[in-house]
Length: 323
Image (tube, rainbow, N blue to C red; front, side):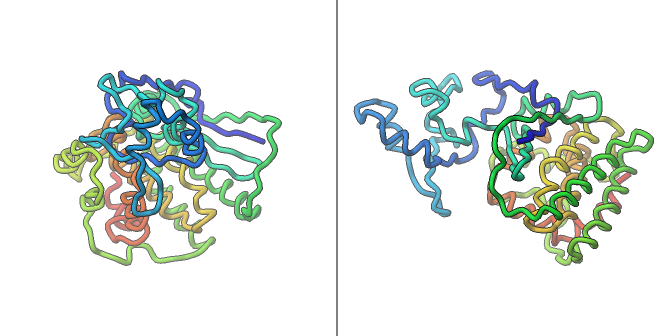
């Protein structure tokens, strides 16, 4: 099997209790089957076993979750911002989400792509300070390919288009805003080839309304939106904006294997740069957005729908904001 990852992936290291915005606060965590099976084997007299049993619950989607403590803190997050479950039974027995955050993995049979998300402030800061193009590495191992029903022709076609999209964003001869314009033109062309649709058919929210999420994770994000810069602010021609766009292209473009919607994936990359431009222009801003959106099922489902349907996020309207 081949594993692909951005070079910065190797440099990431969790800073645990020193983190300025704990990943153990703000959102619910699912208890996966393997972890639940292990918890059943624990001695019922153990304090950690009793604590686990007290907080297990189901959400409206039927997922087994840990009931949050006040201020949306994980019930196992102690006063030093360390995990009592990790301390008591080992990291390997914490839920899958906890063990892997902020890493993400996409599997495509014989190819696995991994990365780290902006939702972790350390990861966001790491990406923000890269003073060059994002480069990717590949390693091969002896693991067998995973069974899948991916259409091979579509996979290789999308992979080729994604490489072209990244190449557009890494063209040093053009200002970032010009690259983004070309990227939108490219995505329209690709979308028309794959499965045409008309974007921007609804007009129910304005651009700021896009960022008023139904599930609030951190009120500081609301303050960022309310205190936004002027929409006349020009996009800075820097590596962070370029790499922000490449982050979204790398992470989401291949999702078009499932929904054939390339256009929304590219628009997400463009909006990522606009988030930097209007709401802060630093790693903390994109971290807040990511935690608020990428890791909330409510907010992310809404965002994907807005990207495809709302006029304010149409190619025409986004191009007006690229300057």
